[in-house]
Length: 162
Image 1 (cartoon, rainbow, N blue to C red):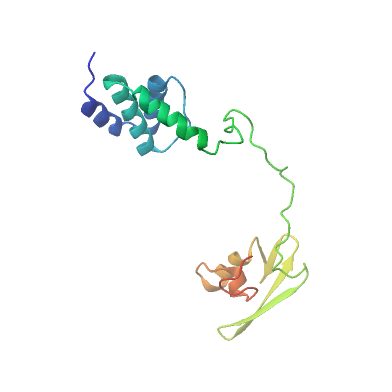
Image 2: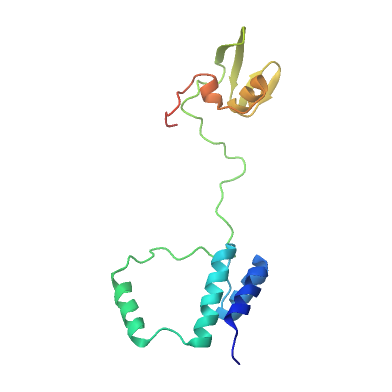
């Protein structure tokens, strides 16, 4: 059976990622978890062409093997997609940001004729009777637009690394 590679590639481009994964498994004999549609189309098209018109010559295979001998090899096997992901327990708190003063401290800043005060809490920031999860959330409540909370409260300067 002779394949029309042009028609096959056109059909591949119309497929969804799920359909491409299924076609990949049919063509290569193994499943893939890749979700990159252009990559899947290229790989499947290459494999279909290789099956229809012949694969690499023996000379090309030997040369590829020579090159692979010099290549850095992967030291860790690929992650098993069926294995549960290693996660920290849900109750584990993140370490405090070193730019923040200790809980109980007050951050003050003049803004549009007002003197703003935000209290640093162990698990957030208190401003005008409300508790916010981040300084950026406080800055957004004050200004009405997103901005970096550390910059807004002058705890860091632009370009500093955290």
